[in-house]
Length: 312
Ligand code: GH3
Ligand code: MG
Ligand code: MG
Ligand code: MG
Image (cartoon, rainbow, N blue to C red; front, side, top):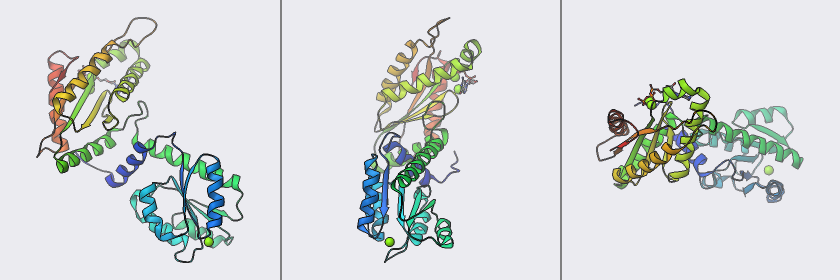
């Protein structure tokens, strides 16, 4: 059970992603020592539906980053207390803000100053006076791409659920939280029954559709605080904080029943598919890897007992 990625960085990106869906307004932090300029930019960005927080004091930036989790930072270069380049370098030192786009705004037209600013972690350099349409376009395209990148890093492309490594990281976080707060925690490992036959008889595209419909059902029926991950090809891991094994098994069993009734083909030979699941509850002394093993053993038992069932 290894962890090759920087968990802190990843968890932060997940937090941003789970707290903010792609339809939420873009959030921009403006740092400019001129309140008038900051207000002009803010008005332009708000006019197209973005949320804006601005400050004239660079010292407030660390707190604002933590509180507001901006999608992008607009940074003035020349400010009395601290220049924008230095501030960008400081922001970039923190892994959780590594991928937040920074766009510099300045009257500075000297190429070498502009390049130095980009070298310190800036993504773009806009020179004043700034055309507001240009500003809006530069900001929104950068945010759109940053959000897409984050989503690609953490989501599985077919189902939109968390991918394997993110699911593991989130499980570890929930285990740590359960230990700290002495709260219950349950996990369920789901595996589609005879899925190879589904692919063989109906084709891979139909198989994909089955995976997507199970993912949709899980998203619709589970709590917002539950972690739903695509753990393997046709295996799903569900992490249920503050839940005991008994109630987890009841929830999963009602999902099992619902799923088993879905008709996956409108035309041709009718197709119904089932899944089996193993549920396990965390207890003191159990780490994430051992918890998964427990759920996997229960899943094996469910398969062994004839499939289409939930075993605790
Ligand atoms: P069991 O009831 O014992 O779980 O049998 P099974 O056939 O589901 O188990 P097995 O692990 O042998 O087969 C899993 C199949 O899932 C094999 C693989 O081709 C298929 N699969 C994995 N990922 C995908 C995917 O993304 N799309 C499709 N269509 N099939 C996939
Ligand atoms: Mg200035
Ligand atoms: Mg399998
Ligand atoms: Mg299977």
